[in-house]
Image (cartoon, rainbow, N blue to C red; front, side, top):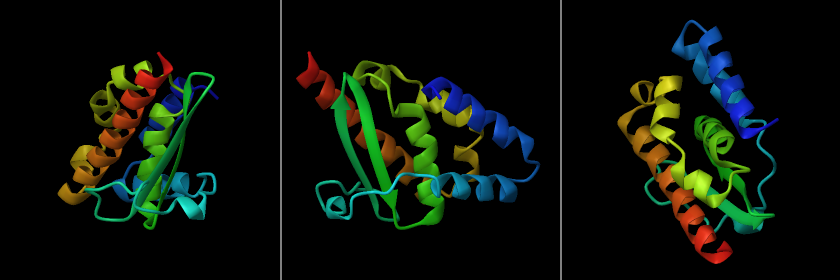
Length: 141
C-alpha cells in the first residue's frame, strides 16, 4: 500500500468513528501493528527528546527512500507513531521535508484532541524525522 493510500485509509477509518474514545482505540490498535523495534536501538542516540513518553526512531535510506522504524513505551504514543509512519515512511528525503504534516493532522482533527504535552511530543517526533530527512538528503545528493 502506498504512503498516500495508507494515509487516506487512516483518514477514512477515523471518520467512521463517532467518538474520540473510539478513535483513540483505533489509534492504539494501529500502534500494535508496528514492526518489532530492535531492542539494541532503544538508546540515547535514537531517543526523541521532548516527548512525555520514551520514543525511539531509527532510520536508513534504501534506494533513495526513508525506511523508518519507531517505538514507544506508551500504547497511545505507538499509535501516534503509526500515524506519523504512514505519512513519512517510504518517501524520499525531499518529499518528507515538503510534506504538509500540519494539514494531515488537521484532516485527522488530531491536535485539538491531544493534551498539550502529547501535542508537543508529536511535534518532537515529526521534528526528529524531518532532521533525519534533511541529513539523508544531504548524504544522498
